[in-house]
Image (tube, rainbow, N blue to C red; front, side, top):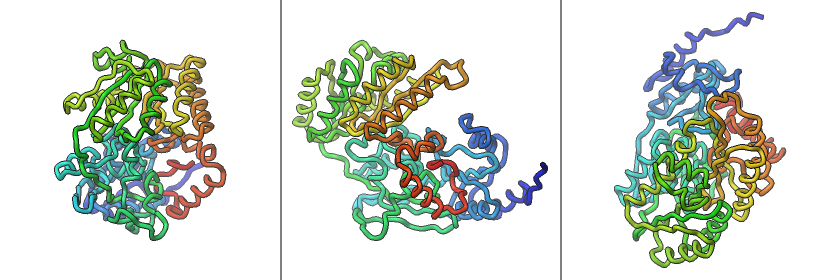
Length: 464
């Protein structure tokens, strides 16, 4: 059956260009291919977007949404494109709205302990600028050098410092958002406490671009801690022993900044990648950091590590050696991903259930014959099992799919979540009912309908 379109693509592009006056509307094939196509999308969604809008102002965002409403087009917000869950891949025939060029640090206030930034500001760049004034921005996703604040807020990114300083949600005071109907609204503000009205700021954090487009963020800054930071590494026979040591450190009162775990497979991969020999020591590695607390805190950590049979414990206060240790942790992913197909997951469980989950992942992988590299932010119960299979196999093996399902069900049974910090995107939106329950799942859809009644903002992401 022939379908006659009411408007041509040229009509839509002309309308976009009339409404986007500060930025650019790009329709060339190279740009659309670069930003819109993903082999991971289903066939009905894959393909080229109609246009890529490089927004330079709030006015450009409002103009894009005006065109989207007029022609009923899906709008996919993008910034630094670091999503791991198909959260910002373009949709065939839709609009990609990029805020990457809205990247100004508008204010750093030491007196108010905050910064005001646009969504395209890179996390690490904000931290560097804050440190020039004796402050720092605490959230440290593994993507700190490349991910944007807007995306961090949209996904409630976590990372390596969450054990002490919390996830992104714990460091956001306010946001400006353009709603689907074009209004720009301010949620939250500059005060460290705020109890007036419903907490719509936190509703926007983690909403993945499905409720509005973030145009400005007010984040907390903290003073750089006094004293000399201490970092170190310790090795254990297995991840279960490591997890028990981590729990003991976590509740000891020393307030570590980092407690990062890497299993034996991951350490072997790092050795290949870095030309090191850490795997000679044992079956699992712990990288830890204390940014203050002095010798007393370090003695507590060392005693607990000894009590839990850690070996080859090394400690350093040298900035270069500490930077190398942090980089070692950041290199985990390229080391594991190299030369093979992979899926990295993101579950979190109560601290008391970390060791049981580690046990389960190892045993389940062996039963199914699946190679699993497990690492993560052990201090807050967040693990990242990476499942791999040969590069030449184009289809995801059934054993990999079965392993993912089993891990998710086990995580939920342990009282955990199947998305600790990577968000939902399109990879996990079918699990909403399983994790949240039928009633809460329905409320999620009601909230979406209230903020975006036409269903234009990042459709099929976050909720199914």
